[in-house]
Image 1 (cartoon, rainbow, N blue to C red):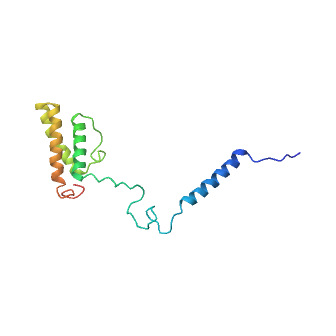
Image 2 (cartoon, rainbow, N blue to C red):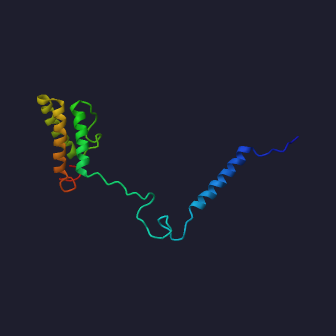
Image 3 (spheres, rainbow, N blue to C red):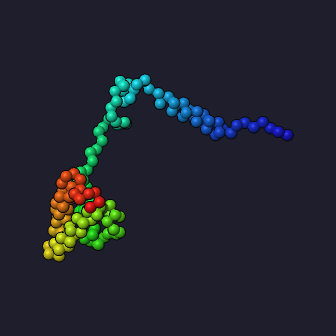
Length: 143
């Protein structure tokens, strides 16, 4: 004896949702012919999505200073791991780090931790500005 089976309600619902999503996707992909910026005027804006400008990039000397200051303070307290590559530094930046940390250790012994941290910020800035004085690392990107 065989009975008629009705479709399982969730399966029918799934088909309906799938068709609705497919139709909705097709409808949102349509626009006025030639509309490139969402306004329909056909003029390209040069950006996709939001109307706000993208944030500016951090200048290389500022990024260098931030990295060197961070890792110098960590190194001064013995809270580091790995090598310069795991710190995200180039060989040249690592050289700056070593100079800054050596000077900060001396300063810490003579004048304390606060003075060492001030020295770290000042020396990191000086050496990174020198390194990136032309907008690119002097001596090449890996130095």
